[in-house]
Image (cartoon, rainbow, N blue to C red; front, side):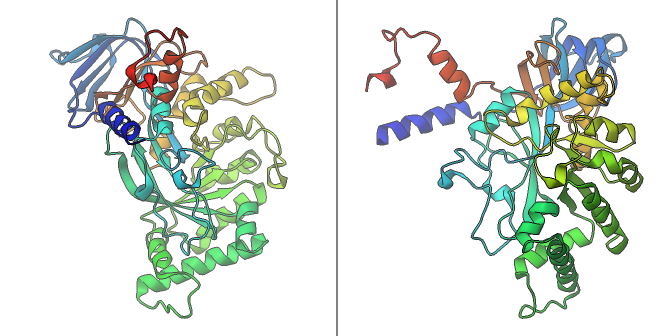
Length: 434
């Protein structure tokens, strides 16, 4: 067993490059997708210097003298920004049924809002490696709710093959209202809103120095964690599905005007799309919610995202968790929304809108607009080269760069695939001789 653990540790060390510097890279002859909603560009070029994009556009418009460093001829292949997938559980679990490897929920914890997802990220998780091989370069992560309507503080991470995964810790707070929040608060939406209002009241008292520990329902840590929410310096992600609940959440801003809210889930968002658009509150919508899985999703439809976008709502695709499918399937669902636009009576997205919904828009919603999810000067060099249209289910990345560093695309799945391509056991590696 000790020998096995030593071998595993050595393999892990080899798989995780350390001290790798950002490369100067020039990618030429690309079918270039900027990620901002625009159409693809033929004969595109991307120039990267010290991990940052300095030019992305047609080769004819490239500044003279910028083409240097490692030269990559895309040979007409598609080049896009890396996928930015919001609200995942990447790096927070390995095996769902093994509690020791699962940090998604803290069911017996005394804390809710104070929970900090960044403290549990496993940068060596195979879910991260698999998602990276699928073109996902950035994500936001969050734990799930436990004994409170507050799931805790989420973080932004990169999916690079190195130990420095955290981009921004405590970047947002997640609260669940609607059916799930009602269940956690005592069985009623009334109780959920009362718990929410009390929590913000106690956080306000804590910020003012008037917090009374003996009379408070929150722990000191939870009250402290919510101070930045009521002040508007930390985003508040609110999970809600039903149209009536969406309206109720939007109305909270009249009482708490500083809340920097993002709506999550929003299966019936299309019903109140005009109200969402007027509020300016962005949405992270699950593209899979197309049937009424429960009473708060009776109005679920595949056209939800398209109808909200048509109404002027800023929508990112999210809600795709880790595991065998998860974030790496985002391009497939974005592509489905493009196909949906061709179905009579349905509402989908244009190709440019669909790509933006998994790149620049989630980056913007997460507080990184212009830095991630887009191929423009000044943005981080998160670049993916694909063997076909990124939104086609049959396409796959051939190269992935994060911060200008080319990433390994191998993972446990690819190693198993390669191991069992040939069942001839005569040339097995030494490890298989045990």
